[in-house]
Length: 507
Image 1 (cartoon, one colour):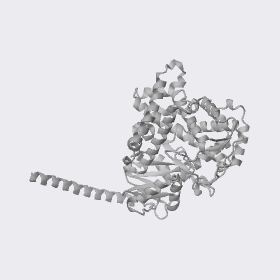
Image 2: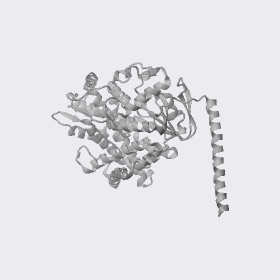
Image 3: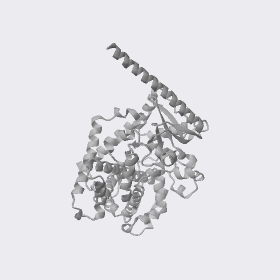
C-alpha cells in the first residue's frame, strides 16, 4: 500500500514539475513574441482592494443607480481609450479605439470568438446566431441572410398594420404618454409579423397575460444574463430558480407561436408570408429546440434594439425643439404617408441624420465582448504614448464600448456629447483617418458579424417616426420633464440600454 502511495505521490510531483517547466517555457516564448512585435501593456485601471472587489462593487452600485455607462465613460477618460484591468487574478482589457475594433471585428476576425459568453447566455438564447462561433455561426448566417434583403419589406407592408395599431393605442385627445413600453410592444408585433407571417398583436391586447408574462420574463432573463457577464468565470454564481423560470417562460412563448404558425395550412397565406419560419424549420430538419434558439435570438434583436432606438429618438427630439421643427418640415413635404416606401424614407436626409445621431449617442447595444481564441495582438493602445501594439493571450476577454467611442471628442468634435444631427453633413475629426472614419461609428457592429437586420431596423424606425409626426405634429416635452446633458439621465442596462424613467411626451 505504501509503495502504491509513493508511486502516486511521485507521479503527481513529476506532473507538477513538468507543468511548471512547460509554463516557464511558454512564458519565455510569449515574451520573445512580445519583444519582437514591440508589444507593450496599456494603462492599468488599478484596484484599490484585493482581487478587484472594489471595481465589482463600483459596477454593481452604478448599475443600481442606473448610471453604469456614465461609470464606463469616466474610466476610459481617466485611464485611456484602451485599458487593462485585473479581476480575481484574471486580466481583461477594454477598448474604444477604432483600430482595435477593426482588428477584433475584421482583420483578425478568426482570432476572436464568444468565449464564456456562450455558456453565460445559453440558458436564455439557446443554439442561436448571437452566441455561436465557427461553422455553426457561418451556417446560421448563411441561413438567415437571404431573409433580410430589403425587397422583403420595400413596400413597408410588414410594418403598416402594427404602426396603425400603435397609433390606435395613443390617446386621440392628446396628453402625456410614455412611448417606450408602446415601442417595445410595436417591435414585438413587427418582428413576429416578419418571422411568422402574422403579428402577436400585443398593441391590441396590452392586458394579455401571455404577452405580459413574456415581456416580464424576457427583461428578467436579460438582466440575469448581463449580471452573469460581469462576473466573468464566476457567472454561475448568478442564476438559480428565478433565472430558469424566466428563461422557461421565454421559451414557452416562442414555442407557442412557432407551433401555432407551423400548424397553419400553407395555403392559408402566401408563400412570402410564411417563408421565413418554414425555411428555417426545414433547415433545422424539424428540430424544434434549434428552431427556437434562432427565433429567440432574432426576437431579442428585433424587439429590443429598435424599441430603444425609437424611444431615444423621441426622448431627444422633444428636448431639442429646433431639431424637431426641422424634421417636421421634412415630413410635411411628403405626400400621403400610406403610399410611402423604403426608398422614400432613405431619401429623407434629415430623418436619416436624426436616426444616425440618436444611434451615435445611444447605440442600442452599448457594450460588447469578445474572447481571444488564439494568442493575438491589438494594434494600438500600449506603452506610455498609448500607440504600441498590445499582446493578448489566448482566452482573454476584451470588452468594447461603442457608446463611449461615439462620444470621443477627437472623433466627433468638442461638442461630441451634444445631440446635433447636422454634424453628419459636416466634416468631423474622424474623417481625417480612414480607419477612424470606417470603424469610429459602429451602432450595428462591423465586419463579418455586422447586424443582418440593420436596414430592417432603420426602415422600421424611420417609418414609425414619420407616421407619429404626421399624426401628432404638436408633440412636445411635458412641462414636468427635465432637460439634462445627454448621458446624465438614468438608464436601464440589460443587453440594450433603455430609458429608466421612460420616454414621456406630450402629444
